Image (tube, rainbow, N blue to C red):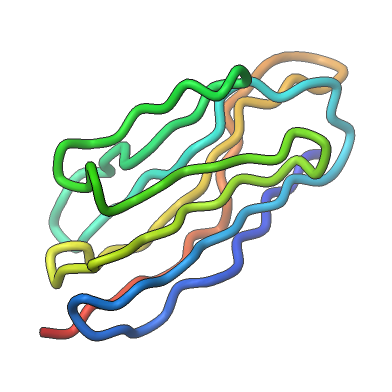
Length: 119
């Protein structure tokens, strides 16, 4: 069984910063892409950032230049550094890791963490 645990999130004023972290544990053979989604009330889940095994990154246009995704393959961790936060960044953030265990490759998700940005 594979488990992803997120740490971070909370309440911050506009212009502030937060850092989210996500650690995977369990029976893991390999991990490919890692990253973060977010979902605001009434909205669909949105891919925010992704980082490949080789370090290539993708960012949603709305966060480019403000958010940075990073990873540590040995620790099975992914981080999201969020700077210059805006009220529209308010959402539940979910990490993901594309994990191959003894059976298959599957995208696994964390439990979600609330980020609230006040104006």
